[in-house]
Structure formats: C-alpha cells, structure tokens
Image (cartoon, rainbow, N blue to C red):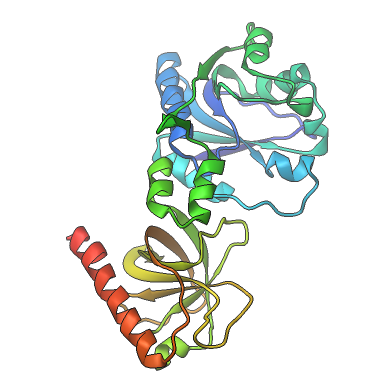
Length: 311
C-alpha cells in the first residue's frame, strides 16, 4: 500500500487521480466501512486510485493540547485494516496547530486540492477547518470546480448510529461481542511479551505478560476468551485483564494470556491479542486450589468455544 503525507510545511501534490474518503477512522468500524465501500465504487467509476485520508496525530491531541489520547486503533492498525478492505493508498494529513487554524476554504485548497481528487466521500456529520466550521454542504459548494463530494448517511445498529464512542462504551463494560459486531471484526491490541512474576507457571498455568501499546483502549477488567498472534500464527488463549488479587495485588493493570496448546519462550516478541468473549469478572480466591479449579474450568470452556468452533 502506498502512503503519502500531506504537510503544510512543504509542497505536496499527488500526481495520480484519486477518489478518497476522509476522517480519523478510529477502529475502521462498520460506519467507516460504508464510506470505504462508496470510495471503492467511485474509484472504479473514475478509473482512479482509492485512498483513505486520515490525520496524524489525532486532531483532538493538537486541539486540546494533550500528550496522549487512547484509541481503538493505532495508525498502523488503521492502515492494515484499510488495506484488507481494498484501499490502494493512505494519505496522512500532518495535523498541526497551523492546520487546525485553517478556514474551511483554506483547508480545501491547502490540504485537499493537492490530493488530485476526482471525488471525496465523507460522513453526514463530517466537520473540518477552524472550530469545525466546515460541513458537507460547505465542502460540496467550495469543491465544485475541483471534485465531487459524496455524503454518506448515518449507519445504524439497533436504531443508533455506529460510532467509535459507542464501541468504546461497550469495551469498557466488557460487552465484547457487541463491540465486535459494530467493528465488523474482533477487537485487537498489540504489545510486547515481558517478564512477570511467573506465578502462573508455578501452578501449571503459565502466562505471557504483555506490555500493551499505551495508545489502545483496554477492555473492562476480567477474563476473556480470545486469540494471540505469535510470529503470524494464531493460538487460542485465555486473556486476563486485572490486578492479580489472589497473589500480590498490583495497582498497575496487567494483561496476561494463557496460551492453549503452546510451549514456547516468547519474551521480547511483539504479539497481538484478539478478544472474542467475556467469561467472568476477575476474582480473589481463598486458596490456590480454588484458583486452579476456576482456571481449569475457564480453560475447558475456552477449548469448547474456540478450538471446537475453529474445527
């Protein structure tokens, strides 16, 4: 996939004809996918490359002047998802204080016209330019001599708009099945396997402790069925998000995966976790034997749900 960065600090111009959709696209959920579907359709019609125009960093980071902002997806993950959906090119707008201060008219001329657009697809609630003054109507009027604008209506589920904030709410409640339904795929996070206290190994349930990229939204604490990707291979896993209340309680949230049918050393490796089903709350047990019995029960449930389903 081709990646192009459009910056106000240097001259940029894409030479090839492009049809693009525009937005931050956090999570690239089913609502976003409707924009991509229309983009692919129009790109074929115009014999142009399909593109996704996004922003880096998140405009809210610049506008609100904060150092971090958690997301459903990193820009790397968004590029990966867009590629799977058939997008040819990622156009990243280098979002700065200067760009945030552009009027809608100047944003059009300095950020969009250099993209050589034949058509631009946006959502009905798309806003841009200084204080979000630009909207699809203004964009359509101002862009007439440059490119056509296609506006996509709200994509709903259960009579409510599918949105990033709604998906985040489901994740924070542990309603992973509902979150995955709105995403159109299973939620993933990525991180590096680090050394832990190795308590799981002592009781026959070794776990991979994962230092997850701080940008990701972390689902509700508890035990999940899921998958872990190690060196491009997926393995069924029980994922524990919590504070280890039975052993040494820690204020710092830990994310661990007990990988089924697996016996390899993977310290230092970059892995992906995929969340499928919320099993139960994290619990403090009165004895190690109680903990082992519960973990064995979780393991049997996961085997039934994940391995048999895969077969």
